[in-house]
Image (cartoon, rainbow, N blue to C red):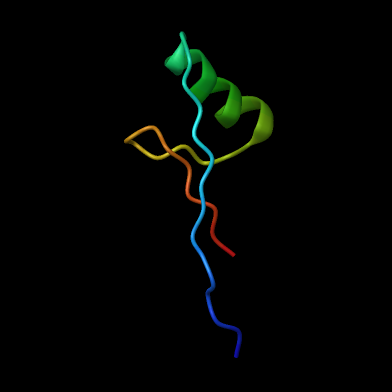
Length: 42
């Protein structure tokens, strides 16, 4: 079984966070959580 060797993340700062959330949700199709982030799960 593989072991986790690290935890990472990508963070963006935006002048229009609601617009960015909408873009990720509508265009990219990512499920944006209620707190404004996205969790990518296998």
